[in-house]
Length: 260
Ligand code: MN3
Image: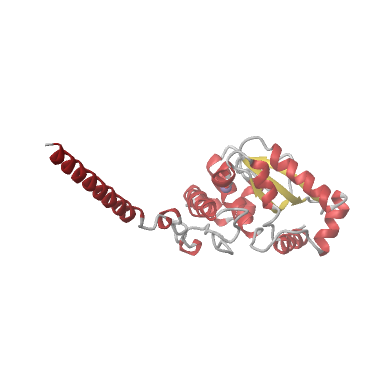
């Protein structure tokens, strides 16, 4: 009897070992599929994104680089959502708010110069449309550093030094409470100034405390940085200096001086 018991016990051990082996094999099979694929879902192409109203007065400014071109300073997913969802929405809503009105015959700058601040649909969506268009243009891959030429001279003249400008701009972006924008502008006297605005307002709008032509813009809405930086807005502002396309800002500066 004892012998039989031992025999069955031995069988049980062999069976258990076998099942363990099978389990291991099974686990291997289960864990083999590439988990990477899901994590690295491909981002889209900004050129595929168009305003809903193809015949609308306001069309999206082309993103002059790929969604992932500004990484790691601004990640691809943030750029994609920002451009294809937020910016597109402002563009679509601006077309709806101006269609069939006399605003449709004006440029966005002309609209801001005379806009009734109570016209919230045009103020918010027009601001969102213009501000983001500028924001995309003044950033770029392999950018950053400090400006050169005429703009560098003007920065030294009006702020004392590039470092002094950067300190002021960082402060304006950091201290803007809640959603808004930090700006470098050319005033009507032809001088450079740093300012900030709430929501989608900008310094071209009638009634702003500081007015002028924007040449550099930083979006400090949470949607611009939350995926990568969460609540750390100062880290996002620091990273922004790595992607400023100063050649593009200089062109804006020269155009602003010519418009005066
Ligand atoms: Mn934004």
